[in-house]
Structure formats: C-alpha cells, structure tokens
Image (cartoon, rainbow, N blue to C red; front, top):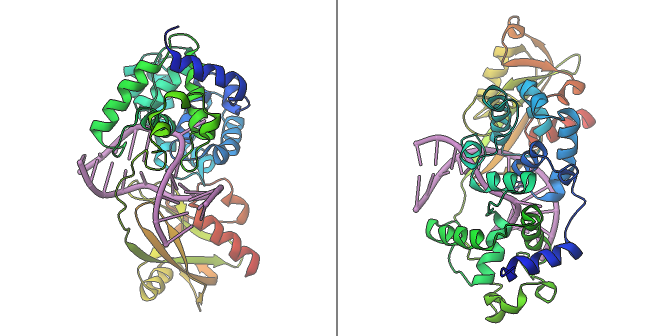
Length: 348
DNA sequence: AAGCCGGGGCC
DNA sequence: GGCCCAGGCTT
C-alpha cells in the first residue's frame, strides 16, 4: 500500500483505537446512523447513555419509524438540536416507504434523507458497509488542517473543499470502516483541540503543524460574534394534584415540538395568560436563571401559580395538558424546563 | 455566505 | 465566561 497515511493510522488504531463504543457492536447501518446523528455537535461521553437508551427502546429502523413523535422526542430530551430527532424520525419513515425498511447504500440516496449530509452519509457507508467513502467531521478537519498546514476557518467553503480533497485522497480501499474510526479516534484522543499529544501521533513525522509549531494556531477559528440576550417569563401553573400545565411548542424556532411551560413577555402578561387557563389567587416569584444557547442567552423568570383550578375546555386542546411528575418522563422537555420543574417539585 | 438550532464539558 | 464538540438545513 502506497498510502502511508492510512497505513500508519491503521497501525495506530490496532493499538490505541476505541473498540468498545456501543454502536460498534454490532456495527450495522441503523446503529451507525443513529450514533452519527447523535454525535453531530454532541460529545461521545454525553451520547453513549442516550444511544443505549434509544436503541433499547427502538432497536430497529422499523421500530423508530413506527414510534410516535412524543416517544422519539422524549428519548432525545436533553440532547439538544431537536430537529435532529425529527429528521431522524422522518427519515426512518421514508426508508420504510421507499427503501424496504433499510437505509439505502447509495451516497445520493442517503444524502436525500433529512438530517444526513455528505459526512454522515460517508460514515454510514464506510462503517456499516465497508465502502470507500470519506468523512469530514470536526475531528478529521482538525487532523487534516494540522497535517497539511491549512490555514483559515475550516467552515469556509474554499477551505472545506480543499479538506474534502485531502480526505478523499487519504481514504484507503481496504479496512475502510476501521480507517474511518481511526481518524476520528486520533482527533478525539491525540490530535485534540488544545495541547495535542504529538509525541503519541503516528502522523507526527510529516505533520506541517508539528514541524512549524502551529498546532495552537490550527485549525483556524471563526471570528467570535457576541450573542444577544432575551428574556421570558415562564408560568408554572400547578393544580391541587400537583399537576403542571404544559404547552406543546410550535414547529418553528427553538425547542420545536417539545412540551414546555406557557410563556409571557412580562409579569402582567403572565397574569393575563394564567387567568385564561385557570382560576388562581396568587403568584410566587421564583429565582430567575439564565439558559445559554449557541446564538443567544435566555433570561428565564419563573412564576409559580399554585393551587390553580383549570378552566373548562383546556382538556380539549391537544397542545395543552396537565402533567404529573411521572408523566414528564415520557415527554420531550427542554433541559432547563425539566430542571426547573424537578427543583420546584423538590422545594415547593 | 450567514443564520439557525441545545446542551454539556472543559479550561 | 469563552470555546468546543462524530453537522445539516434554511434563507
């Protein structure tokens, strides 16, 4: 094999690669796909428990396709980027309708499914089927920008195009599944963002960043932009049975499709809204807290309306429901809302 | 090309 | 508090 890059990487993988990840046993398409989607912008250590719970509840693609959306979102709750779960669900249903209940084995057909881009499609083909397709995720971008000494933000189209060419050139035709895992493992455990362990790297001998002492500069970072702050009042309407009123969020915006607390822009609006849903006597202001998203920070002021009496007609609205603490577990809730409700249940 | 979409871990 | 992480979709 003239491909010394892949050969060195595979030799390293045989000694130091990760072989105990749950989606490697068995390494089949549905599990690889699920892991890839969960791992989009979420770290391995966080994903493992979610993955095992998810495949425990929905072991096959057909199980996923047949599940209702609340079940899928509940299994996803806490992972974030909930659109990923909705795409996953829809893609599974498309596979049942169009591909005999299996993921297609063609790149274009995979990319045509919602939530699967070129890199995720490549990972599925390479890992599950041993087909020679490159991937280009955050780990591979870091390894390649350093190895080839490529400057600039890897998110820029021109830089990314260059990286795809390198990724393609390095991918071997044998042991593709192991190679794909190997280059991700190298990025995750050796060629890490800060203080990479170059002394342990099989590619160090001809790595440009290593040679020129540029590992701290590469990969280039995009200019940081400051994020705005928004505010909201969250209504905790609780009845005499300690059930809380939840409202399903719409299809647009953050937390789409999740069950959350009714919201108002200010305390006056909160009172008006609360009175539409229930008869109430008093409100208790709870400590405000901040939740940070990637693109803005949200100041949350919780307002507890205890011993509320539901107005008639609420039960007829499918977007509203009174929930006991037990029922919360079966629903997809935003992480800060889940945390808030657990705290209130403990202390009030 | 830029904006949108969560949450957790780490320093 | 800033930054990053097995990205992809929409505008």
